[in-house]
Image (cartoon, rainbow, N blue to C red; front, side, top):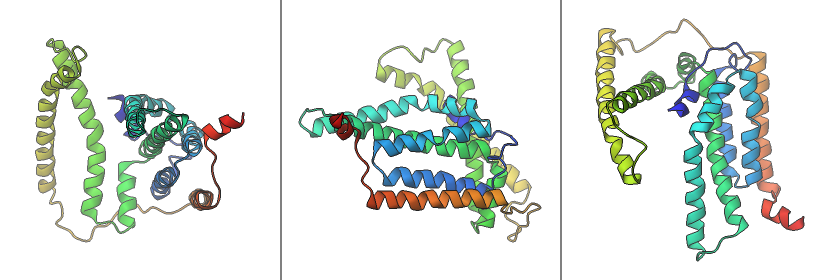
Length: 263
């Protein structure tokens, strides 16, 4: 469950925390766009490495690295599935290009998780909801989106508590073959689903008691305004996007396999 720790807001006073949520959201989407338009392993690794200084400057390195460690198994599955699929399609032949493409797909996933983890760790759900409202997003969608963000770590804590309780009763989750391990998680999923449904009813009752949706025109006590640092960061993000599209269209990124042949 450590993967969810990187998506829980952590209070801080760093320059990254003080940035406007809209700028940080654009940063996360820019990483996603750049990782999707490039298929080169060199670019994918670069997109991941440039985020490490941001993590340390924000002071959220411990939670961020826990998330990266939690995503390791998914990354291994992505690499193995891509490599096996290409091996089967090529008539049971392996080449260095297959490994490079599989690693590129893996680092694409890692870069995406890293960027949205930085965004979640440094952005308050309240500020995110306010930013979406000022972007003319309907309030019902803002509320549903931020509620889902708040609910995810809560469900993760509930799942961990249920797992600990079932282990204390003798349930062995790590023993047996693959099918057996999947069946072992049934006693975890059923109480977790019941707990989620119960929380949804409690939330609905709380919303009704507070007359949610009675006032169509909502007002906010706080207003988000761009600062000088926000404009500078926004310029750097847009410049990176333009540069990325230019490189993708006009510059051919060499493959690692071709560079190794030259050596």
